[in-house]
Length: 384
Image (cartoon, rainbow, N blue to C red; front, side, top):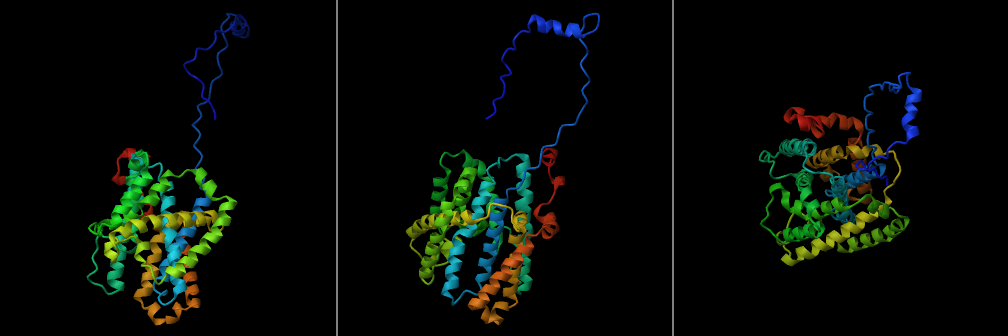
């Protein structure tokens, strides 16, 4: 660590030889030589913060898993293996994404600049895409009664409203001494409370809250521990065991436990099972997320640059999957439910979301996902 000098410490008095030195170098009158003029140089610009390739890789691979898992939903019926893979993916892909979102929200402090970024980067995309998805369903699915409601998120826009709520409460979680147990208690209470309703998808907001709070508490050294070779080796039997358990549980377990959009009584389960499943799912998700993070490459890869465009891939891939469903693709081509069809569907979903994360797509969507909107803010917020 560098120690700053004490500005209040008295400097030692100059010695006689030090005091007479300027007189010998000065003019005949004994005055000191004038100091050389100092050029007025502009302050050096602060270097741009370099992106961490590891976290860009995490975000890209997580969003690919999200898109692939969504593509399995229409074609996995009748396939126990596909349902097991779907359950394993759904156990950790959104928790991993939420944990990383919490990790990068640690500095949120309700300052003018941060609030502006929250509104332009989260609230505005939510309004635009919630409206777009509602209109898409109304006309592509021939559903004239489909409402345009900003209170009841439809399909995948729930994550944006959840991220808005989580981030705006960040100062509260940062102030608590033990925020994670509090967040887990809130998630448990939500899991057996059927009266929360669908407004702002609060069931998901509250039940996924512990993962965001966990991300807020993480530090860089925690990710260093996750990336150790021993953890990578342990991740292999961990995922093998998870797949075997999921294959056993596939015909026995409701998928609603993975979506976290309903309470236990709403799924026809005893109220106390909500507490048990919330804690059990949190532990399983945490273990699988650690295993996933341990195998993410640390170095710069060909897909690293796509990590900065994952918001585009997330918001756009739903149009492809829902559009294929509205067009009857999955009903017309029943062979898509075969193992070969599942592989093809997975490759198409992964390739499509990859293209949606590319810089050209990000530039096209920037007016929506990263709008400037300085006109809407005071000068202090706009200038920061």
